[in-house]
Image 1 (tube, rainbow, N blue to C red):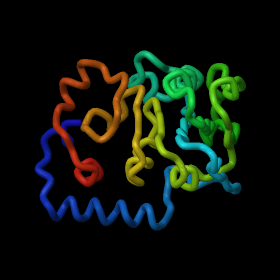
Image 2: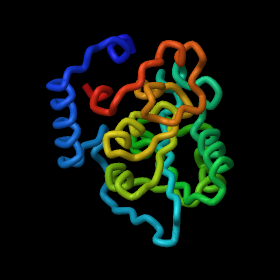
Image 3: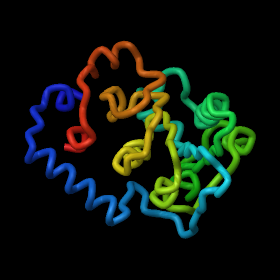
Length: 188
């Protein structure tokens, strides 16, 4: 946070950041390069929103999500704010693999979304959505890399710098993140 607030991002550094972003996109890299199946955006939907699930016991939620702390609460909030959107929920890869516990009430996801997708690469989904809504997920940063609008309901490292729509940043964090950054500056 201090680096983002104070660094003098010169043009050479920003160019390097831009170049690495392009390399990541071209190589179709994500944090979790998993998923064997493909997904297709419904042709008749004007607005498609992806909500990636998180491991609810992770520190990023404990320390970075104050009001909404569960995947299903996030999904419910997204549905209520976007009643006409096609909402897609993607459970966390570690949960799907049985490595981490699923979130509270996660088996009820279909109540709040149109579709649950599992074994699909998030990169292929990001290419087809209009927005992503997250608590603190790194998937939001991956969406930013690909120029997809991101709404945060927590305070991930990339929120509060003018690149995301931030619905629940604490006043304390907002008071520290007053600088407006470009995407290349954030990446740098």
